[in-house]
Image 1 (cartoon, one colour):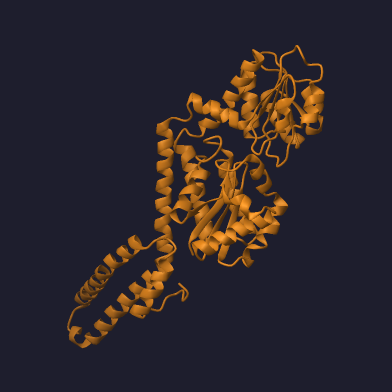
Image 2 (image 1 turned 90 degrees about the vertical axis):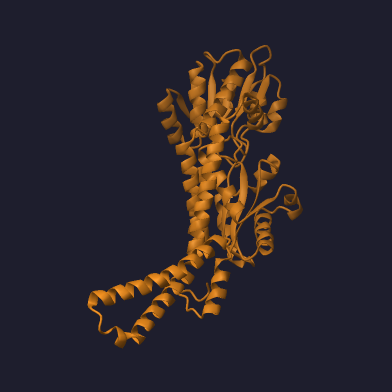
Amino acid sequence: MPILSLGISFRRAPIELLERLAFADDDLTKTYRRVHDLPGVGGVVILSTCNRVEAVGEVASYHAGFLGLKQLLAESREIAPHELAEPLYSHWENDAADHLFAVAGGLDSVVVGETQIQAQVREAHRRARAEDASTPTLEALFHAASRAGRRVRQETAVGAAQDAFVRTAADIASEALGTLEGRRAVVVGAGAMASLAVHHIRERGAGPVRILNRSIDRARALAERTASDPAELETLPAAIADADLVVSATGAAGLVVREEDVRRATTGRAGHPPLVLIDLAMPRDVEPAVASVPSVRLVDIFALRERVASEGGPAEGELARAHEIVAEEVRRWVVRRRGDELAPLIKALRDRGDEVVRAELDRRASRLGELTLEQHAEVESLARAIAAKLLHDPIVELKERTEPGSGKTHAKVLAELLRLELDQPDA
């Protein structure tokens, strides 16, 4: 069955819609239970990250798959189908693989080269498989996507773009405050982005630095590595009141920094340097209304992206090489998929060749009886070589001309024409 991916990303959808579409853990369990009831859909993997929500499915046809996957997204998140119409995109077959591999390589993220996405791609497939919603074809696709993402990180410098992104955030904070030297900072989160944020603000002399996280153990771990102070997330309102800079970089599905807390914390701040809030999260951590609070400077991920773009992102050569790697891995996946689809037919063709050789040798056994064992073996080897040579070119042409997803159809037609018995009758 062919591959179709259907989704919405930051490129065409407003943040509000992405936030409504995001799947929480319990949402995935309920959604995957419905997959087998969708007509024309054999299996699905749902990739829900801060930048996108995509359903990658093995489908009977483009039309049936499109309707089924769109229904799955809309009804699972209780969103009217018409709301998805404008930002919705789809990728079919090789294009679906190319898109997924680029996503796994961090080439289609708000922050080009971000490192979390590769693990998110792996986890998306692991979850689908655990829910019995994946298929062997989807498993091979996602394994290939993980390989592509790994190669992009190992063979190019694209991954360094995430560091440049956070460095720019620290530059903006320094400009807004005049300097970060001695400025009190709060970092919300304890993941990769938060770790980079601590590094860059520390590099500019910020301190003391307090790290808040839902998991106090993770906050302690990051604090120990960076000579910072860990604290519970519940202390955030008080921490804001005592800070010059707040950087938020969590993976939370909802808002973390609320307007009312910021407004209360900054009361009486007039005449002092502004409170700078850097929101590195997607979906956003900081309530947008915070921007209207006096004496507050809010910088979100999209403003940062514009600044990074104006200063020059990853080197063009590195990006070009990353896309070459994606193209190489797509070709590799296509060849392997063709081979898997055609394997029963190719085996049946070779078995038929062997049968013909054996039958002809048996029919001429009396005439070959005067040959020595060595001569008989040579004749048999020659016959088998001729049969293999005659089958080689058609098999190569079949692999090269068969589009992914159509191999089983070709195999069935040829099996009927040549009266072949395949190991997989439905192939």
